[in-house]
Image (tube, rainbow, N blue to C red; front, side):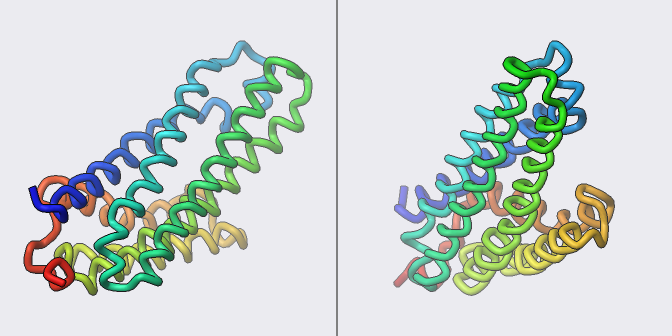
Length: 223
């Protein structure tokens, strides 16, 4: 198997792993995020939260892995932007890790100080902020604009597919800014619609690279 095929396979599989981990983790965290005060006052499903934490940790590994494994190829197109993509992934993961700590803080409150409902609500709000600033903003810059541009110029994947990233990235950023300034609700209709192109971009990219691999006639593969 050629080296670029091994890289594309690892890149695609890691992208698919980000979907497998991030979506279930968000669902597992809902009891804490929807009603943090009620969670610490009740029995609580701590193991469910711990499973979500484990998935988030795997998500962090997969996120950084997507940028690191493809760096040797993308740097042939632009070393600065390729390094920027790695950096964006790391920054995104910092926000994810911070969110995990806030969720674990709520679990600790349930075990040690169940009457401190106000602190639980504050920690849940901080978790929401990390989601907005990380997956809801930085992702648009990293996975959308930077990676979309690199894939479009390098022709490693079909250009029509890469255009989804170039469209979805700015939409993610703008929707996040709108939530920041209360133009619309977080997770509401506007933000959900704005997420669709980026969702399709990342999913199609992961499947394409894992199943088919990079386009063999891409100029940077011959350089």
